[in-house]
Image (cartoon, rainbow, N blue to C red; front, top):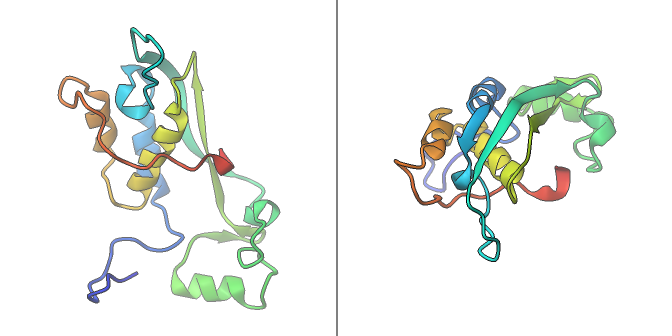
Length: 159
């Protein structure tokens, strides 16, 4: 992808650095104050945003994207040569069943409002190369970052 002025962007459509996302997800494990990774409901009298996550990971889903995709342009058999064209352009990773599909799996004792959506939003920023995995450390350090920065949380449609 290019910027409007012609400069190359670090973003590649359909591409995520899954290894970096896994590195960032691993930093979520443990007992932390997740106030920068949730949406605070002012009507609730929450005394603590500390929660414990026992597992957080990015795992490849074995079925491939053809089974999940409702967008015919993403299906392996939607258009003749669609997958080979996308492969040639370097867009995404493919298996015979269509684009590779990954899942964010998280296990914890309790979650805050929109915590998972916020975590996935940050993981997408890392996967796109817009943030370094160390952003998770920074967000979990509420002494250094007492106010939640602005970022998009993940859409709830696929969560």
